[in-house]
Amino acid sequence: MSTSQGSHVRATDWWRSAVIYQVYPRSFADGNGDGTGDLAGLRARLGHLARLGVDALWLSPWYVSPLADGGYDVADYRDIDPAFGTLDEAEALIHEAHALGLRIIVDLVPNHCSEQHPWFQAALTAGPGAPERDLFHFRDGRGENGELPPNDWPSHFGGPAWSRTADGSWYLHMFAPEQPDWNWEHPEVRAEFLSVLRFWLDLGVDGFRIDVTDHLVKEDGLPDAAGHHHQPHPWRDQEGVHEIYRSWRKVLDSYPGERAFVAELWETDPERFARYLRPDELHTAFNFPLLRSPWAADAFREVIDATLAAHALVEAPATWVLSNHDTTRHVTRYGRADTSYDFDRAARHGLPVDLALGTRRARAAALLTLALPGSAYVYQGDELGLWEVEDIPDHLRQDPTWVRSGGVDRGRDGCRVPMPWDGEEQPFGFSPERASAAPWLDVQPDGWRELTVQAQSGDPTSHLTLYREALRLRRETAGLGDGPLHWHASTSQVLDFSRSDGFRCVVNLGSEPVPLPPGDLLLASGPLAGGALPPDTAAWLREA
Ligand code: NOJ
Image (tube, rainbow, N blue to C red; front, side, top):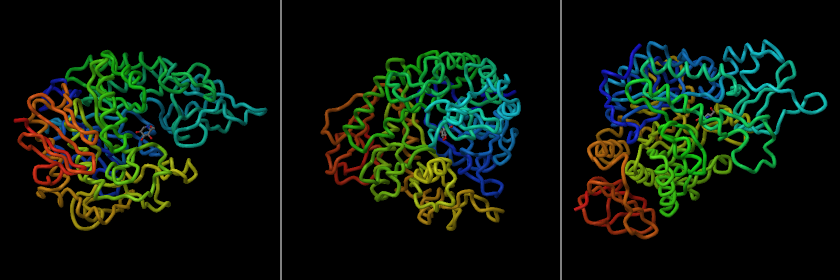
């Protein structure tokens, strides 16, 4: 057994201020040349992350999985998928990351598993009425011959949330049919996940990102959703989830080294959101309203104020997220006429994008989010200014949402394209030279030649240099991360706030340059116009 102790990571409520980098293992770096990102590739590229200056990595699932949903369909919660490597490599990665001062957060998927999970397979084999089936939500269908799903719940990926087995019964899956939902009323399910938590904590991980945190408990009797207007919803945010997270928190707190949780929560009511962050529950949660917000100072200000007020209720730090493996990359979002984000991807896909505008705004957004109170997330490639790849040929699309929606939703592949590292030719160093296979999603745009880590290193104006500088200053500046924020009066087009220690951030979201307040310029997201801050630009200042 190993722990975080003895490593170079500092224990100081680190999660309240941490900058956490999301690795999507399949697309980060391919070490063995088979076209799929893996742990060997990640280990070889850890230096990039240390140099970038982040505090921790969150790894999207690395477990044994048929990859029906990019690894969010777990067949074995205690082992690494052979496509990614081995458990020994995972342990080595944790040690190497710790030696570089980087913590490791792993993804935990407790709402559902893979249809290949041995317990689901045993349930299928055991047949209707068998106790093995109680670990999942098996039901008889409705209709004369049970030919209709047991209720009207839709799957998030399109179609009904129920599939029928060969023996005629139905099972619940809130996502793809390959992802049966666990029955969290069953004590064995609860015990199993406590044991899984311990397994990874014993191996030395520093925390967990919890997938669809609010879905675990379903309303008694699984009632129809139609006409169900009251909160909570029948499949999410049920009161019962909170006791599960209290029990998890106890386990985490019994380990040395300040391990932490981050919840994936798309809850829009700030007060219900904050209930997950009560002191005996989860430490942090992704705060998605900023990601959904249009590029507008009043909309951003409203989100920032609401976020800070809700988190203050429970004394939890806020988190700031611009992109992840489920959403359209923000360079692309911010370059469209409608800069907001929602899951109606089909309606937004392929709309005209001004990438230069989106990139300018993405640079400003980086300085904004890294200056706000709390912790911030960087999705792999954000630091390079990667855009969404929207012209993926349909036959290469792999996201289950594409097939499940009957080809309406073009899915999330466009933000999961393999990273460009170096060189002049695709796959830009993603796989080693003389690889045996092309990348699993072989659609890197030609234009990424200028965006490789190699091409951007040493260029003082590059996106990567901006991130490196911002993260360096954030580390050196005591007032950043967790702590108070003070707004200055400004026009409705500008965000202007100070943190402690004389640090000030000004962002111009309007269409005219605005005067910069007095102070020493620490960093700007783009060139300044004389003493003025141009549109779509942010500046960090040290107040005089
Ligand atoms: C949220 C994950 O981020 C997403 O990628 C996945 O498809 C769903 N949860 C289901 O696990």
